[in-house]
Length: 392
Image 1 (cartoon, one colour):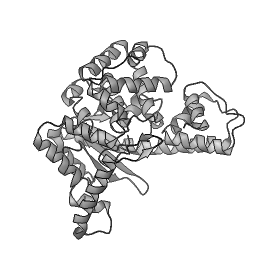
Image 2: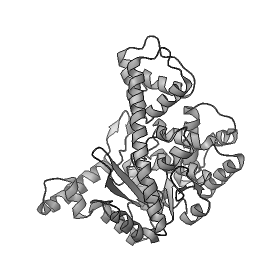
Image 3: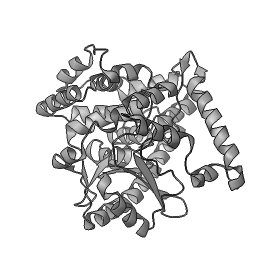
Image 4: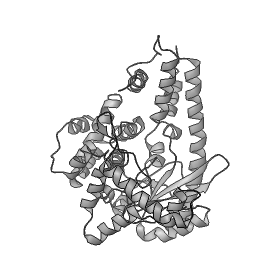
């Protein structure tokens, strides 16, 4: 059930309201600020209100808390981008081709100011053949991959962490595929994307990202693959901002790409929700009408879309999209038996003698979550686990 404060936030971002509700009390105020924060749009809301100068009737407490959120996002963005530019420069000097994905690129290409698209990490995409060079370069620069599993089937990324100060750290998610899900992992080819890349301003000469059509495709996939068709406004805003910047030719490139990759259902779903959530815009009538067309059920992404929030469906989709017995056995092994260092890191205070029991508990608990998922308000909820969850 959508609260009144959440409805007001959505109407505000659609441009349907301006002033503060006259009868809104303290509970509404708190709910509104929490909704802005939970949806990842608090900095954006304050920035847009401040730029327009439209604060008539708004409570001082709400305004000050939104300003605090924007100030914090601005500080973090500046710290992260300074470190990110240095990383990109170091990788470039070692001959590594690297593409920025998701929030780090979107913030500078699709938002009115970089800090209005908050993020907790930076996502890089590199060739698998360059992986050893990348790892050596990052570890020599003070980054630690930590105890994370070095699995190559159940995940296609590794997080490197570098302390940046007493109150923050820089997290780098380095990908060798665009998604952990087998269904989506090879949807984009690195070599093709590198040839069609576009620069990301403000992060140095080594900062590149996907071409506009491929960037929109990834935004639609990311919402489904890692967030179970989430209606969180920041994911929908990404899609909206990218879509409204496409030229007519780029729109046709996007539609051709979704058809060729058999991802029409996922992209239609993302576009339909994004164009509903935010103001009507000129120039995307082609995308709007396309998003309202039915999608054939023979497309596997259409079947996955209906149960993207269910752990069992994710597991079965991965299983179907792995070819051969050996990759499937490796997939099971990496899920059930991550490396001992990772297991012990998840259970502080336990020694190696505990490992048999920890693995047994993981198998039993994981099987229960997959085959007997928790039901909430009549629908199965899938919460992203450490192998699936992403924050960009």
